[in-house]
Image (cartoon, rainbow, N blue to C red):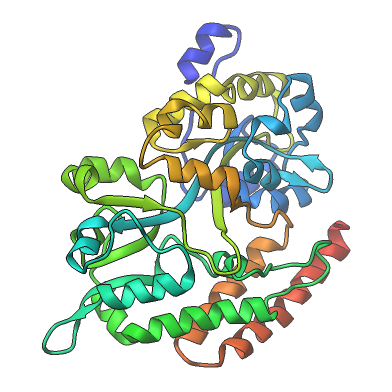
Length: 380
């Protein structure tokens, strides 16, 4: 892409660098006055970095180049919006949906074209799809709510809850909906046994290497990025037995949309050139070209509705998710820290250190202090 851009803009040279430890190195570069001009940036961190004055505002630039909110999937635009300003231009996105093994369904007398649609069906299907050895070890499982690319936030949304109230002045992780979601996860895990799941899952590797596609795990939450890997590593499964469907909900449907945006760090030396590159890169044809090569979803809705995605059996559930029920993680700068408390509460509850309510009550108290601090300092 960089070379294609240079052909059209020969007066601008692009040097592409990939670094480990992006957040630490980027913050050091910005403080030291040596910021790069453009960064391919994890979108969920946008609010936090914008609040700390680490990014250049981009609303005026976007308007000048005709880059409009309606061009993008809602979740992607929501995630770059903070305090009435946008701080990045969405480039790629993803969603989490249900992957399932159709052969496993048929072996247990389940319709392979009718995956579970709600939490009750998900539990019912899972019990039918679970098997143990004569010694009592887990041999096959249905759906495990703590495996795959999932989060407690998704379950809270699916149960009708939220992490914050509408004006971001109150943490709601101790709400009835949130506690109910965590208790559901814990009860679901108890069907198998937390220790038994740990023993079974201890040898699992990446999503393409785990035995879920062999039928040992019948259903799992995974993202769109896995499709290319499955086609490469297990083409027979991909072509014959893979099922892809919307995540089952409870009170409502919900899933997380992640992905990346182009941002301009504060103090970038070549602002006009950076803007020209971003405006070119986020054009639908360029987003589509990148997506087809890498297995992501374009953030631009026009590219995302290309027939390659819209008419494909495996891709269509992802596009439907982006259109209908995918959500961005909260754009508030306190979110990344409070998210850590949410994960901590989950693992404490699973280990039975405290009740689901006690774990989330503690997380809420600590999270409220973080939220109050950010609101006071940054005036959200």
